[in-house]
Amino acid sequence: MLSLPSSKLLSLKTLLIFGGLMVTFSMGIRHGFGLFNLPITSANGWGRETFALTIALQNLIWGAVQPITGALADRYGALKIMVAGGALYALGLAGMAISTDALNFSLAGGLLIGLAQTGTTYSVVYGILGRNVPPEKRVWAMGITAAAGSFGQFLMIPVEQGLLTNFGANDALLVLALMASLMIPIAFMLREPHAGYTHKANEQTIKQALKEAMGNPSFRLLTLGYFVCGFQVVFIAVHLAPYLKDLSKIYPEVGAPVVATTALALIGLFNIFGTYGAGMLGQQFPKRYLLSSIYILRSIAIMGFIWLPLSPVTTYVFAAIMGFLWLSTIPLTNAIVAQIFGVKYLTMLSGLVFFSHQLGSFCGAYFGGYLFDRTGSYLIVWNIAIALGVFAFLVNLPVKESAIHRTVTA
Image 1: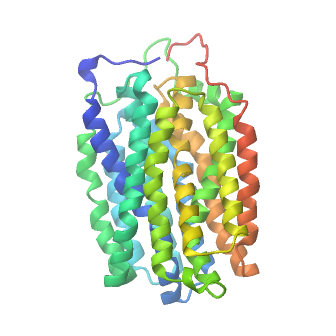
Image 2: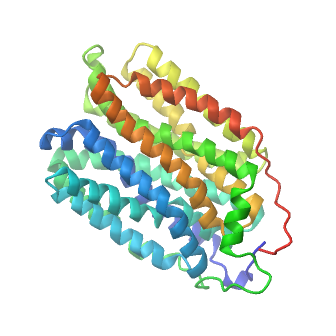
């Protein structure tokens, strides 16, 4: 396993503060995109499928490019990747603000922001953590950083709703672009003393690492489970607000914008406790069992939400439960990857398993809009989310967390 002299490591305080800030902005801003769904589609005369496709494309590009970005960060250092990500994030938000046709909007919100997220979210930050934090503190540090991203989600929902209310969708996106540019100076605070790693004789290569991971049954099972995580969270993030608005015809009290805003904020708030708790529990209990529990509890929560009479109270309870389970899969999944394969190629391998997450995100975002436009209801997609949660519960149970034995030192 790769290790570095302590004199060449970033301090734990620096990692937690600035790694947390990076994911606070990157995850927080994107968490509020669902609030822009109806304002933007109504203003431009688009169907919900258009907005859903943009967010789906964003997630797909994020996932597809993340392994490449991760490999570059592992090889040459993460600084340039994070700086480029911050710049693209700001440009993408500005492009969304000034776009007047669906294609340009999708290129800005889908392509540019999708690329931006490969350099500013968990995979790159967790790679830095993996290289600089001792193994006994790694899952805890990942949980802390995930909790910071959760705080960003909680913080940014009321901020984005306030911007929408006071300035409208386009100007709100421009303000968010300015906020996203703050990730650039944050990246410099996470600059590692070493720029990257030079391959030496008898060390594992990227090709060998990829072959090893793809041939590992536990890696494949984690990848399947992560698809479900992406499907569920992005479907809810993008379509919860319109879902509540639609059902206000039956339950008028849930149609007020404050209900959706509060629900999304509660997801972010309880996500703080869920991700921190996952990091703490992951140090004490088998992480595969924790992952399975998270997925089955999500399915139970969704069943209760769609089967019980809808009200602001039931919406808030659902949001709180889902928030606790929201991103708690991330520190557990990444810690298992590090535990099995080591940290030398952690950013790349985390990005690879994350690609499955983003395939799920694409399906959750796009098919939510697609099936709604064709059936006038989200019920089919809610039921798919329930069934997938049961599937993920089952596939995570056989995962083996022990370190892989290899003849090549990595």
